[in-house]
Length: 603
Ligand code: AMP
Image (cartoon, rainbow, N blue to C red):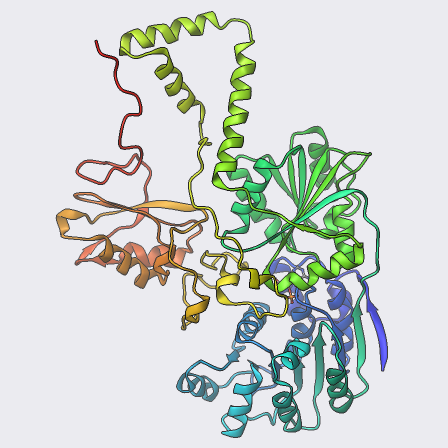
């Protein structure tokens, strides 16, 4: 068995992938291969067996999926690849990844099969013909026994997270399946660790495998404060803005994401929230890239959202924070990323977002850098409000010391007299106006703390953890409308309890109200059914006489929006559209500040 350490290669094109796949990768915004991809793809394309020592977050899925897809003959509607995964969540995730890589392969069909799903549905789907099956060992075994799954055309077999399958007691099932696969096929085994039993399976069933490891060279990092937040209960974007807002000594930040698409999306979203932010990715030419860096240096920009490649070598002393919005592929990338802060003898801060499935990568980073990364408690609404109030007071104090206040003091006196109120009330009204687009008190709820069990790297992730309490339509460019459901509900214990949705909401108006005999539950029911959006993602509803307002998550796909325009409630077309004006409270529920906070002074 020969062993190779994965290191960064130049481009996907260098790896020998077809033009069609290269085009798709560009479309989904993958800029360059991760180290494990660079090492595995050419070997797999060469037809060799491999043992890939890699964990979630390294890009291992694409490392086996892309070469496997090159071998699929779409005209043959038979399983040509089988991927075994320890959990159904991973099966679904891997199937989604393959589907996204199949843009240029019309007719390509990947089918996840796992325990707990109805046999009737699975049998129908299997009979229709799938090119790739992604399944949990038990259910794949069942189908092989029933002869409802036939592996005669198998070209590739992947064992994903083999050590997890061992830990969960599936190794006998895996071997049972391996015994029944045709002689001639390629096998790829991926595992974060290499326990003895996995090594034994590899020796028995793989043919002269090439062993590929992710480098995790130890490296010392400068005195940078390192913290992590385990993604849970709140969308990453909301968490990011909360954190940035209360971070002490914030000056400028570089935020790392994985794809070019994500750099642009995040830059747009942060700009919409009032940050001076821009994307830095491989699509920018040298001149544009330099311009962005210049702007970051001069203070014209405070935040740059970058991919690893684009941010290589940036040296901007005012970068006080590096945020790993998407976890890096390996420790080397981590060390490089955080080295963008703490420059020129200044203090640096590195914040890492870690999904529950990526906790193992966090531990690897800690080991490699020989430094603990401490958990970060997400600032509460009160923390953010306090910070905003403190900043506001600071600004007022500055203006109080300025020249030329008399003119304005005179105006305040006039208003007080005309309105028959005290100067304090006038000041309050002015303070309210001064909030502009950024209210001092933030809306939304504080997330529940991550369950302690989620910190256990050995626990398989659940739906509740993955969905971050937001519909998933924006996760990957080219996704189908997200509002669609998976055709199945998460297990009861995985469902987050119902509470107001977090994340960005947009208020819409609809043409039905009390006069039509409509109740809130009718609206929730219709929207939930027509747009396929779960009711827990539906925000506040204001019921008025002739119309109503409803808050829905931002970023609704056009398809869902169109469906909602045509939806009827009690037979009346709702004509859903963004609500631009102020709410007409006539006869309706008054949501915003029902009372005047200050009593009129007696005349
Ligand atoms: P994995 O380690 O396979 O679970 O992949 C983790 C994440 O990285 C997934 O969201 C992938 O879509 C993303 N990813 C994988 N390879 C690349 C790449 N070369 N460039 C950008 N993102 C990638």
